[in-house]
Length: 159
Image (cartoon, rainbow, N blue to C red):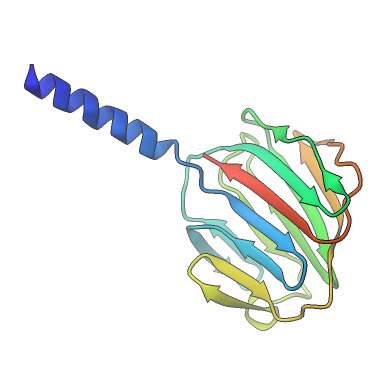
């Protein structure tokens, strides 16, 4: 009986640990910051998550222009596009909402245009821009965000 209780508690702990949120946070006041607790740099334009098999569950957008209603995902593909100054950034998943990848355009270099402030954070070297031109697609369909202006924070929940 003790062993059964121990195994039940262990499985519950494991399930809670696996359901932990590992958000990707993109904030652009000045400078642009990209944060996630487990980065896996692929090349000079690509950051992937080192956590595989989890799924994007929702995206939240807050800006000086207001707070958009959370966009809830249930296994759909995410495409997020934004511009910060001259940097064009995208976040995409596979067709089932797994394994988000952050990419910057070919004119931008993670090594030249960003510095890594700690294990979780990349910060743009230039601080003279704001996030603009935000587009979020859920399974290919554009989502309504309202007015996105000024300091903006985008949180991609990945569980």
